Amino acid sequence: MIDAKRRTLLKGSLAAGSVGAAIGAGLLTPQLALAEWNEAAFTAKDIPAALNDLLGGDSAETTDKIKIKAPDIAENGAVVPVTVETDMEGVTSIAIIAAKNQTPLIAAFDLSETALPFVSTRIKMAETADVVAVVKAGDKLYQNAKNVKVTIGGCGG
Amino acid sequence: MPDIKIRAKLSGDETTVKCLMSHAMETGLRKDSKTGEKIPAHFIQEVVCKHKDEVVMTASWSGGVSKNPYLSFKIKGAAAGDPIEIAWTDNKGESASATAEIS
Image (cartoon, rainbow over all chains, first blue to last red; front, side, top):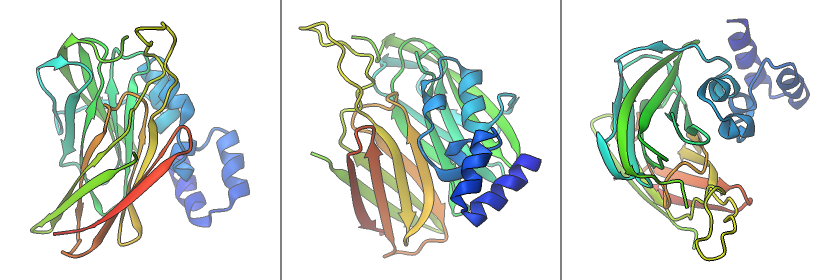
């Protein structure tokens, strides 16, 4: 809670010095503060580490309010269409994760108040795994997952 | 060639924006089948989407997004004729942007 308030405050003030200090103190993730590419999160090898780096926490409540549209079977793991949609209020961020990829975090979307909680893209999947969507609404994290069977992996070579 | 195709369509109060970017999206994990050497990572890291110069969505990506990325999102409160701007930056610092009008 305190962190969230600080974040708003800092975002508003745009004082580079204090933002830097807050990042150093671990209060802010660079992603949310300045929308810089979050290297730690995107190179993390497991989901909890990625979520901690990206959203500052890894405990997400599972809810079927998050709808994940993805094929049951993907013949080509290099191109797996994924759509994440929810009717929850106050969604500020949506992350897409392929559970068994070498670096599971694939995409993170920061939404303004104008944007509706909907994103659609195409991802690579190394093997059959859950596609996990993590949604941040208010100060809480929510997640849902859908299993996608992959016939030919899309990350190897 | 960096290239972005944007289509933005208004329906009721919702505008659906769809875009296609041309980019190799190399993860850095793939190997060249002939030489056996790793192909260096080259992927879009950040996509900034603006409606009338205001940022409505920022996407951060890893190399796990498919080659020639497709992205779709929805915004509310936009009007036909409003400009939608999409700009990406990749891990080599290359960038591209494009603008389209909502129809």
